[in-house]
Each structure stands twice: as structure tokens, then as C-alpha cells.
Image (cartoon, rainbow, N blue to C red; front, side, top):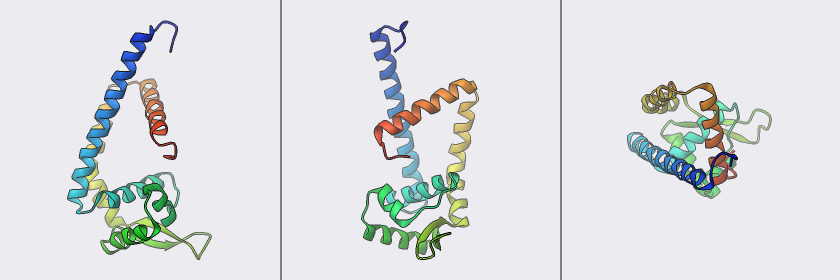
Length: 157
């Protein structure tokens, strides 16, 4: 809290931000609901694909164990999930770069194209929404979202 912001005003600002976070979360839920319906898959399958895409952007590989841990599902459920996504052509199991006994999960080009075809319009709309904000405001917004994400799920990174 800054010295110039009275406690009651600060609380009102925080409540406004929490409402905005809730609204954003609700919008994401609806978007993901539409995507899973359009891609004919369940929420866990879509969450696994999102994880793989995020890790690709970070230039990190994804193991079946990491998927199980991230989704908080058993290894047996993870095997079934990966079988479904492999059979539908969304992922492939590939050898690990340094440990040939291990496998990594990769998104197929077909799945990547389908995912971004469905998500592309929302991504473009989000980028357009950023246009009215300064670099400093975008940096502050990113810090707030990262802090809220870490508060909700400390294991999220």
C-alpha cells in the first residue's frame, strides 16, 4: 500500500482487481469449453495440449510424468490420455534427447494447426486489446497476473 492510498480505497481497488480476475477466468473457461467441444475432446485432454504448447514456447520438453503431475492424475490415467491423444493424431511419443529410455510428448503439426486455428481469433482479439496500453502498463499487468497465478497455484511455474 502506498502512503497516499487510504486503506479503504486500497481495499476497493483490490476488490475491483479480484472481480476482473474472476471475469477473466470465466471468459477463459467459456473459451476452453468451446475449444474442447470443437476439438471433440475432454477438459483433461485439452489441458494436456495447453501444457505441451506452453512448454514448447519455453523450449522445454514434456514427459508423461510431468503431464501427470501437472494435471494431478495417475500414471495409468496419463497413459490412457496419451493413448487417446496419440490415436487422434494430436501428439506423438518421441525419444528423449539425452535419455533414450525416456519418452517426451510432442504436439503434432496437425494438432498445432488445429489448436491455433481455433484459438487464433481470440489471440488476435487479446493482442488488439493490448493496443491501448503503454509498455509500463502491460509490464505491470503481467506482474499482477503472474503474482495471482502463483498465489492460486504455487506449482504453476
